[in-house]
Amino acid sequence: MSVSKDDVRKIARLSRIAVEEDALDQLAHEVSNILSWIEQLNEVDVDGIPPMTSVVDAALPMRDDVVNDGQIQSQILANAPRTEDGFFVVPKAVE
Image 1 (cartoon, helix red, strand yellow):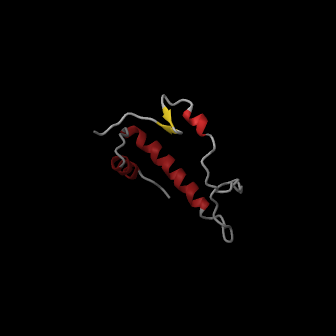
Image 2: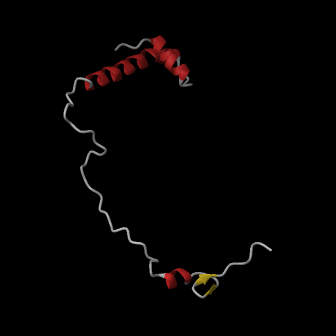
C-alpha cells in the first residue's frame, strides 16, 4: 500500500502532530513500509493455531483460598500508639 504526502498530512492533522513540509516525503515512505510489512503478516497461515495470551505457556502457581485472620495480631498491633482488647484505639471523630 502506498501512502502519499497528502495522506501523511491528513494523519498528522487528525493526530494533532506538527510535521514540517520537508519531512512529509520521508514519513510517507516510512508509513508505506510499515503498511507493507503488516500486509506480509496477512500471508502467514494461522489456521488451527490457538490464540495466545502470552509467548510462554506457563501456569501460575495457585494457593488454596483459605480465610484466616493471619494469626499475627500481636505483630500488627505492635506499632499502634494505643490498643485495647486486641483492637486499635483511635480518637472519637463524631460528637
